[in-house]
Image (cartoon, rainbow, N blue to C red):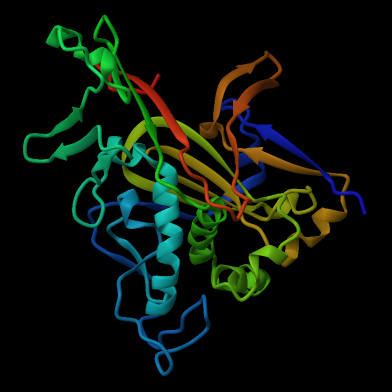
Length: 338
């Protein structure tokens, strides 16, 4: 059987094909109203492994959204300690995938804004919360003995300031990560937000998340991607779980999509392994609308049609990625990414 063609459809604010097709079923924005717990306090049943308090424990604070994204208040009663520990490796992979951006976003993790240290330790970045200053320590190397100190910056690899002192550029290497684990971290968030009546349709996703299904036996990897964009700094995370509108249930698109905006990042994924989506793979074409905040360089004509650029990242591989470069530039005055 031939696989369907995957058609990616970028949206614009004037013609947002994503929100035309989908509607939010869950919207979370970090606030100061205190902690929000999803699920029932008693009896506690883990939605990931289906065990209750008689066979597992529920002592840890289970964050629905990773804490390094700035989430201090959205937690759940339905994630047991064993699953919480299991998922920690996925969250670590997602954090490493974010690289230096997790520090530059200035979001509080478990205790503070995470420090950044390059692999060779020649570039170190630390946020001083008391003075509200981002300290960058860059070490020059292979500097000729007679070089003027004002020229030492030429011998710093990972950090550059433009001659007009208006642009700062970081060139670093991300910590290693497994792309499939990154994708699992996103899917785990989406599964944690699903309404309870949707869970039976994602039984395969549940088993896959806790390794009851071998990753090497997964054949259909068509949705194992994340769509990523940079944007205006968000000090508090915003999360949408979107579901396809009833009116468009026969449009060949996945039933649920997840949007996560935090710090300087914006992400979108489509949730895989939904029984209600099985019919899609018998179609000639699958339509994947991308929310307008995930699209750059949008050009729209007078009829509302247009084009845009989408950054699609393949997260299907189970092999570790090492020495992946991050190359970022932003304006010193405006503090915005260029």
